[in-house]
Length: 488
Ligand code: HEC
Image (cartoon, rainbow, N blue to C red):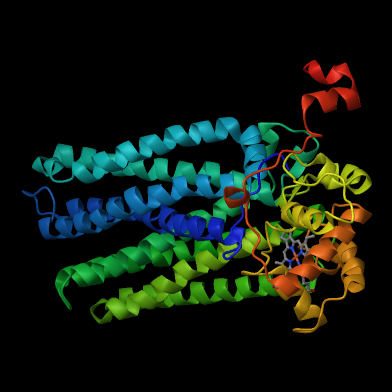
């Protein structure tokens, strides 16, 4: 409401965030948080394996260095770009929610930024000084220590960001006591961190094993030894990941129940939970099998054999993120702000006075028979466009046609009856916030859309129209001089 509405009609705005964020999470978990400690550990093993008069087993060390090269290049390019990219996409698609999150987590993000810069410095030192550190045992051990610091820094970024992710699912008592500490220590935080940490380690190990098979000769002693160690790494993290999954599993529905009284009972959520359950079981069994095979028959492990579990585990994380985003609905910040970026506490006002009157950017404020369709377009933009398009992915005409029959002319009466109750029918959708006239307008707009299939343009194409009711003069008229005095 306070920001112009950016909108991608062909793609669906949610996908823009999801595409960038999911790539980022995969790289962050698989190639930073989990991979760096795995590499550091293997580098140390290379020193342990050396003979008395040697610093490290050099063939071994070269392999680990090459593996690190892949991690270094991907994390500092695609990893860093998608990390910054998340800021761009959320600022475009969901500015109000990111604004609220920044207000709550200001100092957390400030710390995160410092840690991130430290991480970039450390990874550069760690990777670029690898060869020069190979001169003496002392400098090699120092180098390994850098790897350990880097591992800790990577993990700390996760420690901070996971708190924000779980806050969005369930802010806990922040909704009554709005402080950073209350927000940070939300109920799903620890379970989610406890789950993500070993999953990242697992992913790092599986990805590392894939690189081992790519960078070594078949049946070479080096491959056999590194693969076997990798198997041990994966096998030791799997039970922890499973315990974390169970812990998280048990924490999640309870907390969601408390916050979204209507959400949990619905079939849709059960269905998504089920998919996640099978994926967790499948990915766990597969990584255990891979680990056992790697320990038992390392000479039989090849690129193909590792590629499948690697894809599945990275795919699992992708699905997991999607589900996490979905079960949070209808909220973007649990109990506080709906996914349409409207705050729950403002609903009473909108329902009474209409949302157009209170929107900062709208081309219509008062609905008349002449501007009804245009008004409906504005209402659609403000209340549905974060999740629906006019004729792209999850198009509004499609979802109505799915209910009422393909190609059949949409019936305004049925739509008018459906929309005010849509939250009861589909709990993942926020309730409709508008008043009666706005309901009639949006229905007229959707009906017309079925005929024209016109594409809805966002503010980036259409430009903006500022609501004349939303200026100081009007505010003073409505609420008196007190609005000019900043309130405590
Ligand atoms: C938080 C995101 C979100 C918002 C906001 C939202 N929807 Fe939906 N809506 C969905 C999703 C997701 C579906 C399911 C699509 C599917 O899987 O086919 C859906 C489905 C629907 C359906 C079909 C329901 C069914 O039972 O098949 C209708 C009708 C609908 N939306 C109308 C609207 C209208 C009108 C608005 C705005 C007033 C709106 N939605 C706002 C996410 C949203």
